[in-house]
Image 1 (cartoon, rainbow, N blue to C red):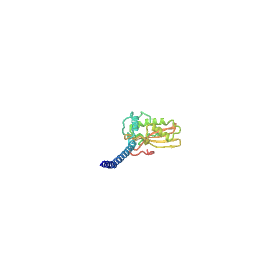
Image 2 (image 1 turned 90 degrees about the vertical axis):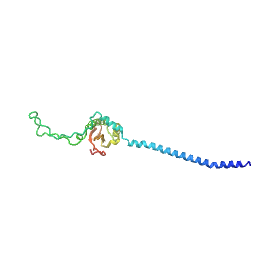
Image 3 (image 1 turned 90 degrees about the horizontal axis):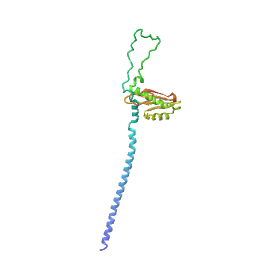
Length: 211
């Protein structure tokens, strides 16, 4: 009689062991699954900011364009060249021009007639600040020119046709903003650096050399 409870107790302990082992295994599986989820979420959190940066427009570049153009008149359609001939001065009020004089012809294309007032004004500021920054480069390389343009706030996506030809590095800048057509064409050559305005297509991608 004294041995029956002992046998029953031993059976009870052996019956509980598989159940306890199953519970421990299940808990371990849940812990591993949770770790995998945390690692996946952490990887997703690290990847999302990079994608968001690529999709976000460059606010600093737009702010730079606005800052430069803030003293310029608001955008207005370009003025068409005059179509009516100028009125002749009263007789005797001026000397008659020589017979071989060449009358100036009003432009019908180019920055003079295709850029609005805001872009024409802003282009002068862009030209001056870029030319000053490139002036001290004795033998400018594309890498040096790009670095200076980046330092002035011009992003890589707006720099086109950057290449070296002899001692000169040429480039184009796409400065289209708010419906404008402004672009710049530059040649960095030390003290002979030249930066001038050009006209980009109203829509579509910018292609260097097709202005």
